[in-house]
Amino acid sequence: AMRPRVLCLCGLLGAGCSLTIYPPAPGDEVDATAHLSIDGRELPLVVEPGSGKRCDGHPALPSSRARFASDGTTRAILSLGATRGARLRAVGRDVRVDATNGSLAFVLDRPDHYVLRVAGRRFYFWVDPLAA
Image 1 (cartoon, rainbow, N blue to C red):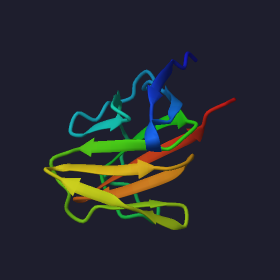
Image 2 (image 1 turned 90 degrees about the vertical axis):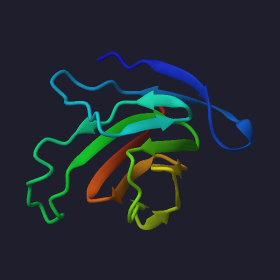
Image 3 (image 1 turned 120 degrees about the vertical axis):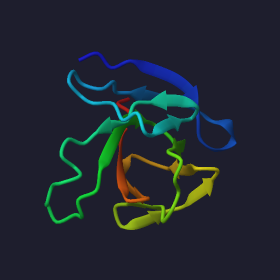
Image 4 (image 1 turned 45 degrees about the vertical axis):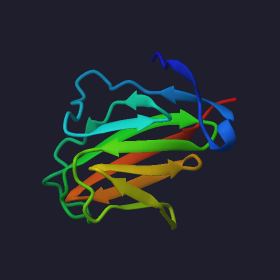
């Protein structure tokens, strides 16, 4: 599979880092209700099929996901017109979220699996380490 490499500026103090964006797979439904940017680059959010009805121990919430690889801290902005009750977690830790004008801003500081719950929805952010 082709994985386009995109160079960008990210992180604190303007340090440079690389970002690899994974395009949606054939047949994936892109979420048109929310928009995600990582360090100013648009990233597709893909709808998790059946996420509004499944029973796997989590509440059934409509869910979407984004996946990318990075070798540094990235700044994310999620625009979805709702910020009520936003909570972002990574494994074993909470991550700060700033809400402004229907958008959420947060920092994904290292490769990890992040889960954001907001306004009755769930967003997954899979951040892979960038292969050296």
